[in-house]
Image 1 (cartoon, rainbow, N blue to C red):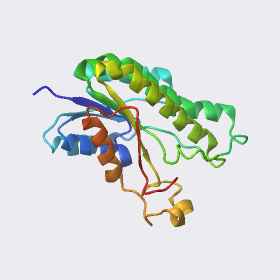
Image 2: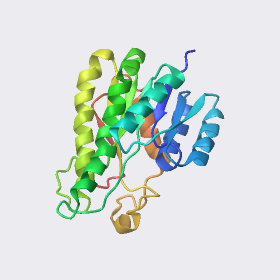
Image 3: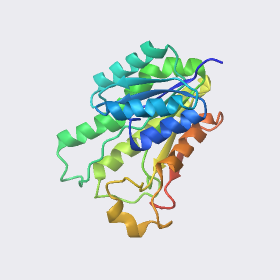
Image 4: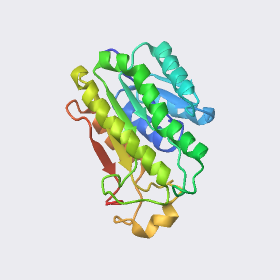
Length: 237
């Protein structure tokens, strides 16, 4: 059977690693992306191979559009065909709209919106040829319409990414390519977990494995597109 390669950005640690392992369990071959965590990336790749699939390492800096384009080219050159893409890498800034310098906001959008879009643009022909899938990682609470002054630009960047997710779902549907989003709430390693611990409806944070299960579901599903699946236990409602 032809190998079905999926690039998971930021898959050396935490959520990205869990996603890579879950997809390897589903018998997808994994392109393990990292920027500086090479040792952890090697460990992720080895763990993926334990499921009987191939796994390659790719180093890349997604802080610029050029870096994203270079990563897409490296992925293409490495394996030749791509079935899917999981845009997991993202930056987080805790600051209100007025108190966030514009260069910081630009850097946030560069990583959270422009880099995923560049990867998709560059890899779309191969994903279309495979009738594959794209999953972007968002954040919970985007649908409730509540104003946010705690991490304003971060929320704005994720809402922009969801807007593009829906647009791409429509644009790529003639090629039978699915484009969806998975939006976690507080996770066991979230930097804000202590702040929100008493606001979690389930009285616990999500595990990385629970979020990875949702990603795998949307990668497998062949008739679901343009959707945002929250894995938040009611947080953000």
